[in-house]
Length: 280
Ligand code: UTP
Image 1 (cartoon, rainbow, N blue to C red):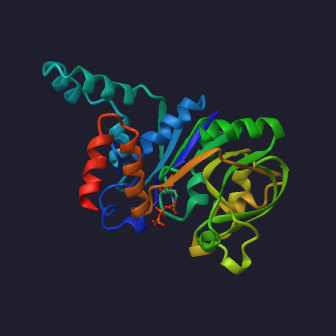
Image 2: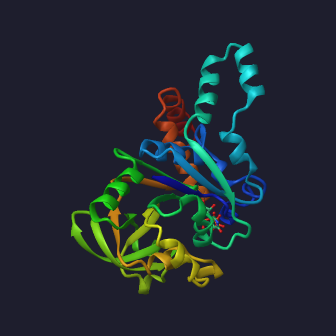
Image 3: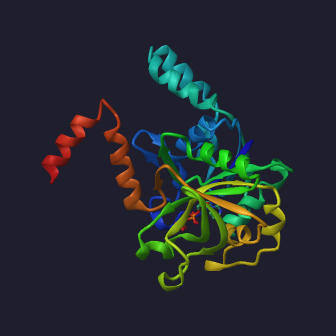
């Protein structure tokens, strides 16, 4: 299976940090956000990845490209550990790029993948969203897709007052934590939200989605919304992700995620706890 990572958005919620650098390249503790996303794809058995980029996103390509000068310098300096890390990034997967010419929304970004994906099911992984769980989120969705022979999206329960920030589903639970979806609504007002189950940035879709995006008119925010095209699929299932999701596009979430990931690091944890104690 191939994966598509949309990473062409402007990242306006994180300005000014994202004025001249992609939000997908903002580091979470010690790695750029999009590297976590690619590592999830690889851990899910995917090794063909298409990144949707746009203007000002060059550093994403540079990050996954080979850097002869850097590797040479690290070698001469005997910094073998860093050399291994830098080389491992290049060997992660086969990565391809296509540019979204105008930032017309997530649906439009996915449409840019039509030629590369061709006629097979594919994964969509938002470039500004990291997941952490015992099983990779995308692997969980691939299993749901194979079980029901139908598109599958990852879901997460969100507090009722926050539903207007997400795509929300209406569905019937057909087995524990799996829903047959009847309706999807993008950023509904709290009073109109059909549930508290939000779409959280991971999808495995049948290629029918491309024709449906093509006939989708701009929706919320004047953007071509993937959620609107998903609503037109004949059948779609939702699976509550057995783990945690981090939206890096929101600056406070980004900061919390960096702290949480640093707490997982044996070298950083004690210093960080001491620092936070002193600060508070
Ligand atoms: P977001 O809606 O979170 O991204 O899209 P955004 O538009 O960059 O963010 P704000 O709202 O202005 O802060 C989720 C993912 O889809 C990509 C983004 O790069 C992000 O990884 N995206 C969004 C595109 O590739 N193209 C678009 O036109 C919009």
